[in-house]
Length: 74
Length: 140
Image 1 (cartoon, rainbow over the protein chains, first blue to last red):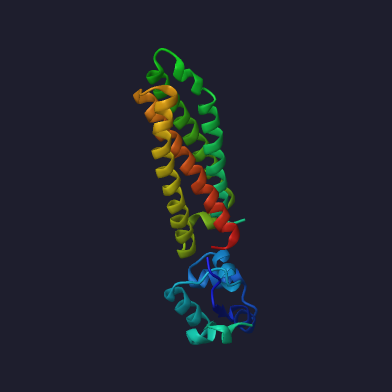
Image 2 (tube, rainbow over the protein chains, first blue to last red):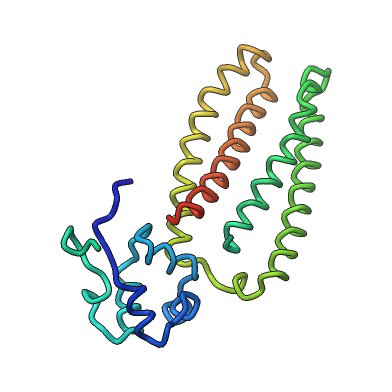
């Protein structure tokens, strides 16, 4: 499978939100902790619905959580 | 290791264990009435498999009650679909190649044909659960 160009700021956002754990985020989004870990590590690109739920949890826009293209790479 | 990965390991080990027990007796196909033997062996193997699966899953659920209650999320469903797709190709290839081989080796008996299809099915299930484990370990 080709490497994804989708990157994210989940880790930074978690720490900015009182050091939210992956498990807490997973519970609020409705996925497993392993899925949060896979998304955070860039191994799995979530559906739009999960992406929007994550943004909602952090109280930001989706494009503040996920970035696309080489410019988004860190 | 996630709960789902553990269940995949349990199922994989159960299938390998039971199919080894089953295939260990394959030479009995050469006996006068292999059809009866095969039906009996399949029944015993299926029962053994179900017992192992049920006991192992009950133990896993007792150890991980929270994870066991959660429905599969989208990544886990995607992993299942990917694994099923690979297993389909294994089953189709195994059945299509296995039948001519069985015809050649064991004659044109219906028991040999059934064994070929069954062997392909078991192999496809082993591949499916191995693929699930690989995808879980890789992330998706």
